[in-house]
Image 1 (cartoon, rainbow, N blue to C red):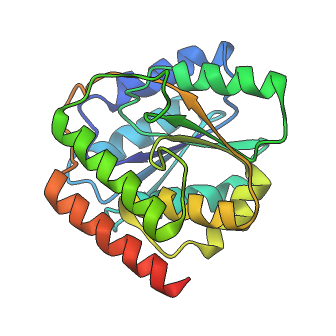
Image 2: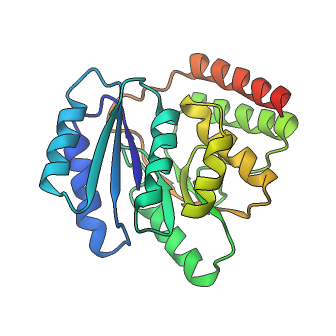
Amino acid sequence: MAVPIYNEASHLRSKILRLIQAKGAYPISSILLAENGSSDQSFKVCQELASEFPDLIQCFHLPVGDMGEALSESIRRSASLDCTHVLLTAADLPFEFTDFDQFLQEEKNSTHWEIYIGSKAHRLSELERTWSRNLASWGFLLLRKILLGIRVGDTQGTFFIKKEFALKIEPLIQSRGFFFTTELTYHALKAGAQIKEVPIVLKRDERKSSVKIFRDSWRMLREIFKLRFRS
């Protein structure tokens, strides 16, 4: 399980302890805490958790302040871990464990999907979101379909990826930031991957989101065009 960490010190410990408490119900073999460029005490908290749970938690520091770089490095580090899937999630865990439940249920029924996504776009998902976030998501979805041919409803949910496939795709990804998982999806589809979206229950963040609608929408648009013209 890869968890990017950026200025999460105030609630990080309680969130990770929730993961540890859930370990009995879910096959979590390792937790990688990828602290990237925080200005608070996030890395210190990561180190304390790794010291308390050395058989379960590893942490590392990246100075760049980039979620995509944190995910990329986590995938590379997963090569040495004893696991079949890599889970890319978020430190605020707004989905509770509903996406994990869906993933496990799907795995019981089928094993031919390379990627499962806990998707906000799934018709059975339950969401608590502002109208501006919904509008931005809809626009991003439309642009992905038109310019990149991506028909996956949500390319920024929780990703459950077969480890060997993740290691194969990661070197192809040039984008960083929030666009990382969108380009991951793009290359996965080009490689013939089967992607299954599963519903989630999304709660509002307990803390102020770092996402800025207009700033990040503009960045996403630029990344879409960059990927379109280099492919």
